[in-house]
Image 1 (tube, chains in turn red, blue):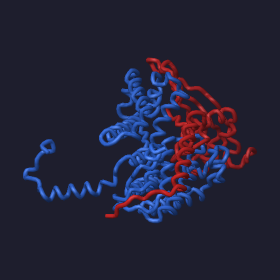
Image 2 (cartoon, helix red, strand yellow):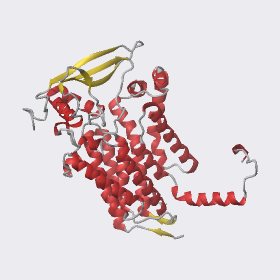
Image 3 (cartoon, one colour):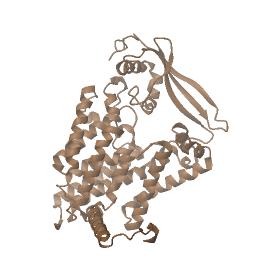
Image 4 (tube, chains in turn green, yellow):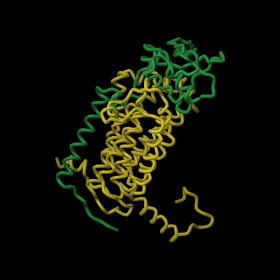
Length: 160
Length: 292
């Protein structure tokens, strides 16, 4: 068995010390004052928000009217529509402000499930559960979008 | 200065790096195939919903397209398998680090960040800074290995400690007495989750335990021996519990906790065990475990 001590040269020590200090400082700053776009130095904010004990639990979801008249749940997952529910939630303010972004959901559906009836209208809704004893629920409409050119949603007036 | 040098460069066996490469690069294979699979689907997502993290823009990574993400995955898998074998540690490791940076920032560029990948990313960036390591290099004490191991350890601890800090920043000091855990248990229930969720006092106790443990986590950097093992066991059981209740695992962080474990001693321990076994063949009938 080989034994020995491998020491670093001063330059090797120096750059490693500097990198270590910079990386550690950045990651601390990320949580202290940063935001998600700073990743890998984003705030470690999963589950860091406060849910008041007398508050509500919001579970946003999407539904779609299809070309054959049915109302279906949009499968928000990586294997379903290709976008996670949490990713949709992260964009919730944008989607409410600009419902036309939901055209992208119709495009994504047409790309990933070409054999299913196309989406003609998309609804963004929130199931709100009150943290009272009865856990009463209500559904709130947040936004909706009438899909342009549902047969081929990629071909629409707002195309980038 | 001496204390700082001992902290960051204190002796670590080069063999620890061989073990870490095996564990972490094999985990990368699992990660891109089973855990962070959304980049493949993101190849089809219209660019309107692409909201890149800044590092991705600065480094010039493009918006994902279907072919791009498939090629990227093949590059990551190939480089990770080579690096796991211990061969070409600098080249294969660097390719894997850049590839994974592209892959993970893709996953995080649609408005959802999972902070469990931070330590893994740091591990992938520091492992190529150490020369080729073999499992037999137990007796080779290396300052380069020590720095890499310390960086991985500090990153893992940062995740815990800064999660507690973020709870104070975003959730305020009322976080531990709030209903965040009930929220999580309601949205992703599994096993005993509904029962726990219906007992608010219990959820408050669990939240306090979580918060205090996260704030105390830097102790892992100084603990030794059984105390360190106990600390690691606590966090491992914490992850096992959240997986059982919420189906949320923190595997990318868990694999980085192996940087705290003296894995390089496994072969010697195993050899000793086998010698003992052959010197003292078990009596028939075998003695019960409690009798040893």
